[in-house]
Structure formats: C-alpha cells, structure tokens
Length: 578
Image (tube, rainbow, N blue to C red; front, side, top):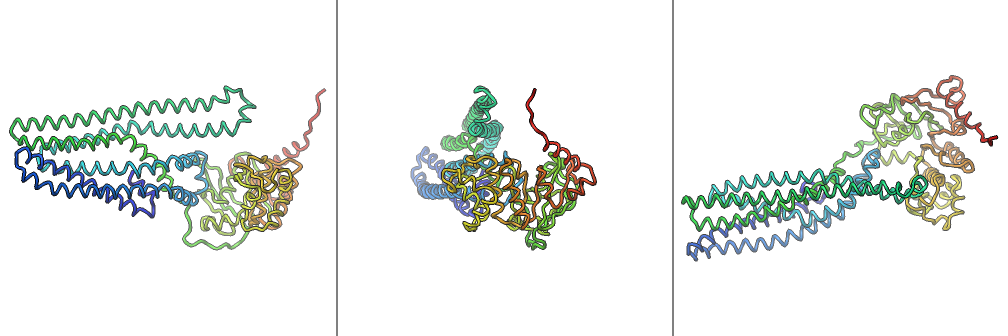
C-alpha cells in the first residue's frame, strides 16, 4: 500500500518520506512509553516509590514526543492525501497521453473510469486515515516485543512467535476477501455498463423486446452483484472472527506461560503483573491491525490498479526524432501484425502511396483494411516490417509530429458535448472563421446548421447524439478539411451518408486529393474508380494485387469479382409482386 502511494505521488514523494518519518517517530515513542510502565508498576508494587518516580521523567518526555509527533504526522498525512487526490487525475491524464492508442480498449476505458472516481476516494481515505494506524501499531508492537525480551526472554520469545502467527492469520483472512473483492469490482463495472446501455439504447430495447426482456440484462447484473456482495460480507465476517480468535489464543498463551513461570519461581510476581499489563496493551494495536485487514486489502487493491496504469509502458519514443524526408508519402514494407500472439491479421503487406495521390483499399471484411490505417497512425507497433510516413519510420518520429501529418475520418465518429462550431474548430484551433465556414460548406455541414435551433452554437450532445450518423460523419470530414494535413485517412467515410449528401463527400475527397495524399477504404464504385491506385487485400491479410481500375480488371482475380458484385448490386431494383 505504501509502495503504491509512493508511486502515485511521483515527483512529490518527499511529502510521504516526511510524513512516514513522523509516523515512525510516533510509533517508537508510543512503544517506549508503554515499556516505561513496566518498571514503574514493578517499583510501585514493591513499595520503592522513589525508583518509580524516577521513571516518570522519561515517561513525561515520551508523552510530549507522542503528542507532538501525533499532531505533526496527522497534519502531514492529511496534506499529503489531499495533494494526492488533487494531482491523481493529472498524473493519470499525463501518462495516458503517452500510451499506445491500442491500449484504450472498451474494457480498459471502463477500468480507468472506475479508477478516476472510486480510486481517488480510496487514495484520499488511505492517506488520511489508514497509513497512520498501520505504521504506528506495527512499529509500537515491534518496540514492545523487543522490550519484553529484555524483561523476560521466555515471554518475549512467545510473543514473537505469537506475532508471527497473527501475521499469518491476518494474511489468510485477507486472502478470503481478495477473491471476492475482485469479483465485486468486476460486477460493479458490469452494472455500470448495463446502466449506461439501458439509458442510451432505449430505442433498440423498445423496438426489439418487451419490457421484461429489456430489463433482464440489467436485472441479472444487479442480482449477480448482490450475490457477490453477500459472499464478500460472509468472508469478511469469517476473517474478523478468525483474527479475533487468534489474538485471544495468543494472549491466553502468554498468560498461561507467565503464570507457570511465577509458580515455578522463575519470575518475580510484581514484574509478571507489570508484563501482563504491557502484554494486554500490546494486543490492542494487534487487534486493531486485524480489524483493518479487510479495509487495507481493498485500499491496496484499488491503489494497485492505479499504479498498474501508471506503470504501463509508454509508447517508445526516439531520443533524436528523424526529420521528414518525403512529405505526404506513405509506405508499408513487409508489414506483419496481429492483435494477439499467434493470430496475425496482416502478412507481408507492402504498398506505397505517392504524395498527392489517392489510394483505395478494397477487400473482404476482416482482411485488415482498418488495421493498416491504425498502423499508419501508430495506434500499434508492427510485429515485422516497417511503416513509413513522410519517408520516415513512424517509430522514429515524435507522436505530435506524426499526428500532425495525418487527418483521420473514421466510421465511428465521436463529437464532444460542445457546439457544432467548436467540434469543427477542433481540426485546427487557430483557424479563422472564414476557413471554418469554407470547410463546413465543402463537407455539407452548412445544411445541418440551417436546421439546428441555435445554428453554429447548437450543443451537439455527448458523442454527437443530437446529430444523425451521416451528419456526424460530415462534421468529421469538415475537421479533416480544416486541418489540411498532408495525409488523409478515410475509414468507411461514406458508409453512413445518403445519396443526396454523398456528393459533399465526393467533393471533399476530390478537394483533399488535390492537396493531400488520400487513403480510403471504399465500397462505393465512384470512389474506387477515382483512385490513382487500388490495393486489393485477400482474406488472409495479404496484398492480392495493386494497380489502377483498368489494370486490375484486365488481370482478373479478386478485384474483378469485387467489381462484378458491386455493379450487379448497383443494378438491383425493387418491383411490386403480382
């Protein structure tokens, strides 16, 4: 837990070092103060009041040290916890922008959202309330056990053995809770996802299911969460009972040994009574540690999840980035890649898109078209071969320099919960108003503005929920036009548009091709014919053929099959039945 906190604080670790120093001083002073009670009680029982009074001065000094260190460590701990809570989101954000984009899967995004909310609260409560009792009780208990060994080594040795036993039992009881805690968190993530799904997908749920079936997935998730929570509660009770029983067993063993030593004449009764009092005080902190076991386990697990994100390797960056040698050029040379080990998506893919040309990628579903785009944008690093953008291996470029060369229009467009104007301006924040309007006009966004209640200042909602899929696509194209990057990647860019507005997309592609290198995943015949070269992928993730439309038709093969299927589909008509 402390190591995780140390990682979270990053460059501000000195705050924790100072805090822990005061906590250790507090624990040592508390342990020594308890030890001074032994000679005081012993001398009082034997009637030596002057000797007992002599020990009051060290006790008074230790009490003052305890009071001062308790106050200072409390202040330092609260300050450290508040600082950690305040900067945790910044640390997570700063680190995540350096991670490979392929890291951000749907499950990972859910985990990060849980960490950002629940994890922050655990960090604050742990730093402010849990580190101090754990460290103080542990340190003071160690000091007491060492001190008792000087008074009577036999009782001290038994207490050492008892402490080791209690540590083992505490670890065992925490393990009871560990599995349930992991399952509980997993079920909480599922419930969150089901709630969001239930809220966002009401149209689908109502269209394809009755009320009972629509509620069933959410109800099942809530029911499973309740069952896991009940299991966790029983495991927690079992752990508390086990810890409490073990403490009483060890304390009873100390009492039995002390009684036998007194009866056998191996220890003075006055000293034994004082040691018994110290032992009773010793088992108080041990019991408190046992009670904190389950809470500590949950805090530690949550902190480990945070540090797991912070410890994720960053996208490798070159120490000396290579300068661009061929602006607008894209090349893949012998590229091999798979999302999972042993399952390759691309095999020995080689292609080159010359600056200022348009390249269309065609092929069956699963042939790796979108994967090629992700590798060009360095969402992932290749397993073999080289991907070059601007004439330079993407691994030898800074992320900012690489992304500055690319504009991307994907099939799934995300718009921020802001105005339509600001969503387009995101393509180039320093663009002028005239440039924004020109890009919007070319992409067909102006017609959207005319029907919106507040025009350009209409808030489009989270993810662009106020717009249709085709309208979101046009906003994304306007972003690409505004960015005016040397290379543009269109991933299924025309799939969500109706025929009336397809001309806007065709015009956008033409305008971009005049000034940029365009790579497009295309199924529409007009887009394919307009390409300077066509790359045909097979269903094994390899390149079947490359050429112009006429060259590929002449050679036959997969492209001819593709073309015949599309032209046949284009000629279909609906006729009424007899």
